[in-house]
Length: 53
Image 1 (cartoon, rainbow, N blue to C red):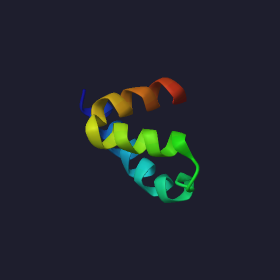
Image 2: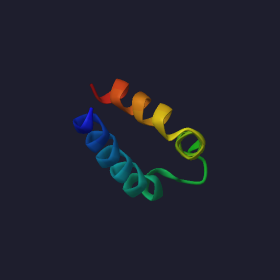
Image 3: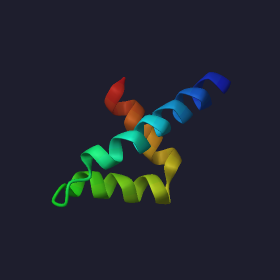
Image 4: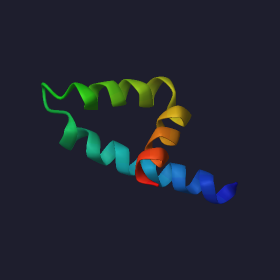
């Protein structure tokens, strides 16, 4: 379980680095992802795992 939390923290760090790159004015997907991340970080991390793995 500890390994999963470490991976989640690393992915969240990558996410916060990528947001300024992705967040173009008309990129609605990035904005929606940012809202999900703020409102429900664990769900966002699970979705990210589903996309990556």
